[in-house]
Amino acid sequence: MVPGQGHVRPGEESPTDAARREFLEEVGVPAPPGDLLDLGEVRLSSGKRVHGFAVGATLDLAFVSSNTFEVEWPRRSGRMQTYPEVDRAGWFDLAKARTRLTQGQVPFLDRLREALQVMPT
Image (cartoon, helix red, strand yellow):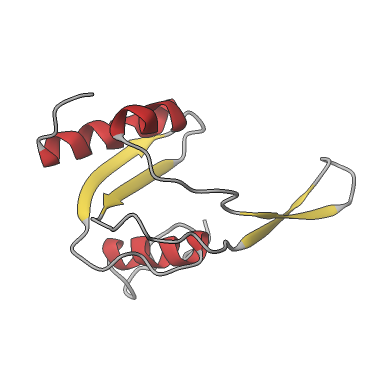
């Protein structure tokens, strides 16, 4: 585990600070201002644990760029390839978002709907 790569830097930042840092790193623009709503943690099928937060934003939030990462591809080829962490972003209502997320991320939507007391669509 490398602190700062999706993890809270112990003694340096809070979980919300880490969430804002990750948003900037992955999306390329600062997270919208405002209080973050803690959506708790989920475990993905890969075993990775992810902590989610939500914040209100206007629809004109532009997704400009993304950090990149390097990985050997194809595997065992010795060739390093560079890929963006995020290849696209969009705004979706809760029903459409449910179809766009992995099964392990869907509980975030349920928690958000409950916190906002939004009727299922």
